[in-house]
Amino acid sequence: MTPLNQLAPLLLAGESQTLEYKASFDKATVESRVASSNHQLGASKQFAEPPAVESSEKSSVECSEKSSEKILALLQATSDMTTKELAEHLGIGQRAVEKQIEKLKLAGRLQRVGPDKGGYWQVQKAAN
Image 1 (cartoon, rainbow, N blue to C red):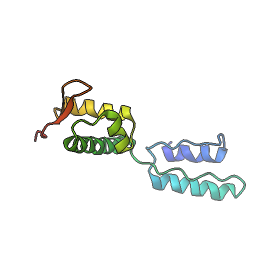
Image 2 (tube, one colour; image 1 turned 135 degrees about the horizontal axis):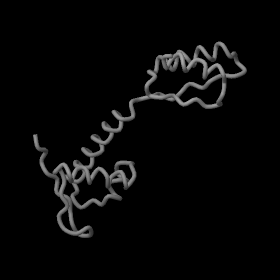
Image 3 (cartoon, rainbow, N blue to C red; image 1 turned 180 degrees about the horizontal axis):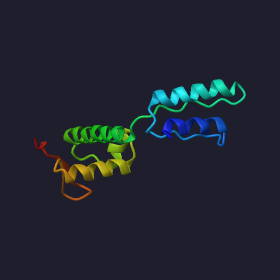
């Protein structure tokens, strides 16, 4: 049985109020199955449209790249920013900033000069 053929009986059986959509189903397939099930079930039991499904791996990598570049730009302009200040400025969590900084340090793009209090960040040029 293909995944699409496995999805239809689950939708029609109504075993659960919630159905988890896996990323392996493309958006068109999910929309088609939801519309088909809603039509067959009638107005009494409608399935909600699933949220837009993106490849979380791809979007996570893109988001990390954008965040890391923003961190580098901010630290280039103001080298004594704290992780808390970076997080507030970027609208992400402090732990996320700390993880990005670790990745940047491992990649040789960022170096801490001096102590945590009183030190500053030095942005390194990208190795091509």
